[in-house]
Structure formats: structure tokens, C-alpha cells
Picture 1 (tube, helix red, strand yellow):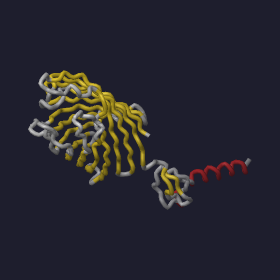
Picture 2 (picture 1 turned 45 degrees about the horizontal axis):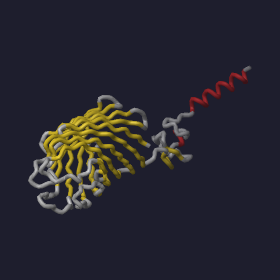
Picture 3 (picture 1 turned 30 degrees about the vertical axis):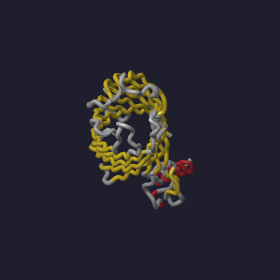
Picture 4 (picture 1 turned 90 degrees about the horizontal axis):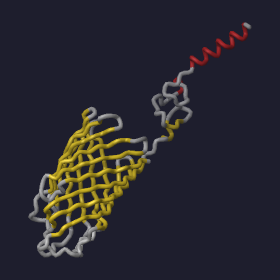
Length: 277
């Protein structure tokens, strides 16, 4: 009986003497890397040799949008439904994006405009871009971008060319809130056709976002851009945006944009569903 009690006592002392603070399977007294992450695989000395968290991931986002406008160039009334597909690839501080879409429009043309062969459905231009983001401080991030706009849209003018763009975005975090501003320059390479004159464009945007809950994020923003046509007013709009995480993989977004100038769609609605892996 005494031997049994002694054995139990020794086992208890042994259990209390073993301490593994970072739960990597290596006792603290022998652990040379005492703060390894739980997602790390460690060696016999407790130091990481491999992370179970991948440094890259993808997402695929499908969207449906509707916009309407009155009295734009050559058009008395205009409405359009668009199905979009976006694919993103992320690796460390780099990301790459491809965005393409297909539209169906209902349009009443001005009787003086010779646009009878204009398509009421088809592909929009496709954008392919790459980005690099750096964290200047724990709260301030800067993202640089460059890309091409491929002429997958048929304008009926036989004047489609590849355009190029560059962008700079800054975001600053304030607790649950964030401030963001952006600038994009687009080089338009189409040749002028009759009275249609093209120009390069500068675009500015800015806004504020807030995490309403761990799964729900909302933002308000303002956007202004030169028109790609010379002697046409700037595009101006205000937007409201919501992002909701449905699960660890699925998410959805809602957006509404109000046009603030004549060349801008009066109302724009969009819903998108994405899968992250």
C-alpha cells in the first residue's frame, strides 16, 4: 500500500514538473524557441521548421450588378445588367487579380446618332493587374499596383487597343475604423475616331470604413475620375459598401453607388459572393 501511494505521488510530482508554455511538445527547460506559433511544426529543440499556415491563397468572386442612366452621350435612356467574375491570388506581400464581365443592356439611342450596329450584349474589357503591399507602420499600409486593360469589349468602332494603368493606395487603421485614399492613372491607347477624342485619365478615391462586428465591415467612399473622352465632364460618385463573412471560406458583398455627375450612372447596385481558399 505504501509503495502504491509513493508511486502515485511520484507520478503527480512528475506531471507538475513538466511545463510546455507554447504547447509545441517540447518542455520549456529544453525549448530554445519558447514562443513558437501553434501552427508551426518544430524540431526537438522547439524551433519552427515548417508552418502549417500557407503563405499563399486564392479567392473566386462572382457578381451581379445593375445600373441605370438617362441622357448620356448618344443615348436617351440606358440600363445594364452585368455578370462578373474576379479571381485573386495572394502570396506574401504580392497579389494578382483578373476581372472580367459580361453585360446585357437595354438602350434607346438618340435618333441623330448612327449607332444602329452597337451591341446590346457582350464582354466588357478585362483587367489583369498585380499589386505589392507594404506595412509602413502597424497602422499604415501602402499598396502599389500596375496592370493592363485588355480590349475584350467590342465598341463597333474597330478601335480597340490595350490600355495600361498604375495605382497607389494608402490605408490607415484607427481601432475598428480605417481611412483610405487611392489614385489611379490610366493610359488610353485608342485612336481618335471622327468626333470622338480620347485622353488619359486620373482617378481619385477616398473614404472611411468600420468593423461593425468581427464578421461585418462597412464603408462610405467618394470617387472622381477624368472621362476617357475629351471635353466631357468628370465621373463623380458616392458609394456605400458592406462585406459580410458567412464562414471561414464564404463571404458576400453589397454595394450601392449614386452618380453625382452627368457622365456617371444614376444608380448602381451590386451583389457578389466569394469563396476563399
